[in-house]
Amino acid sequence: MISKNLDADGQAARLSTSVVHASSGQAILEAEFIKTDLESLTSDQMKVLWSWVDETSLNPGQRQGFIANGLRAGIVVDEARFRQQLKTLAPASDVVDDFLSSASVASRVNEGVERIPMRIGRRYELPVGKPNEGEHVTLVRIDSQTIGRTVQDPQYLFALEPVELTPQRQLHLRLRPEVQYGEMKQAWVGSDSAMRIDRRREVWTLSELDLDVIAQENDLLVITADRMQSEDGGRASIQESSALATKMMTGSSAQQTNEQLFVLIRVIKIPDQSAN
Image (cartoon, rainbow, N blue to C red; front, side):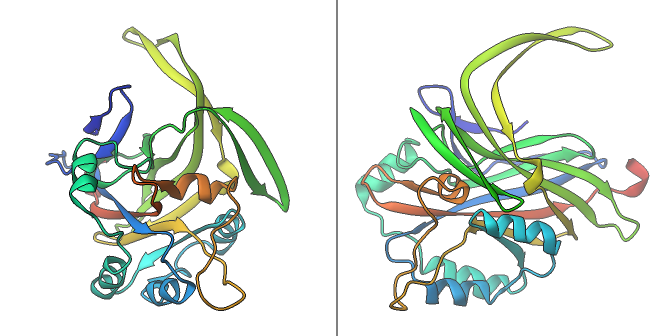
């Protein structure tokens, strides 16, 4: 089970490093959330950062669906240089920021590192931030059409599913953007052995934006918001405020600093074929 620090409302606020023991039949992923200073981030800096990422390793059609929604993803090919560049984009912190961060109230977007044991065929949820209070419009681009919804207290996440193991001992991992919103509801759910209460919110499932990744052990996937070249060649601009990427991958700190989130997902362990 994923361990999280919880805020006063019981919502997942900030992931923290933990030790996870998995059986031989489980895959292990490591999710890392890194915040950068959105205001000072330029298109030139992003260009350097993405020069260390292979975007062509992902399905071209699915990648275009991500790009149409302001998202960008790829497999990191030179981690040392990628992290060195990413480190230069980190927002400046002070004593107040450090205190608020430790109290899990510094920002709407997640931060930290989490190891996730996963079984093939099971669904897992990876929130990228806390619920955003109030009514919010979210715009999604699907098949050249823009679809908008007004949702209450939305929380944005990736649904993760390790689909299968390939004969080459690679992991087929599927990521699906989702929006959970509205009040928590409960219902009785039955199985072969027992009945249990299932508590959940409404879900806007964006299966049209599925991203399938074929990964080996130690591969590192990066997902963040794309940026548009500004006319003067200086500071790049993010997509419009209601776009999916903006909702998922940006936020403001308690100090009102605008931040952009980078989600890094590493395949730590691929299970043995004989265990599945």
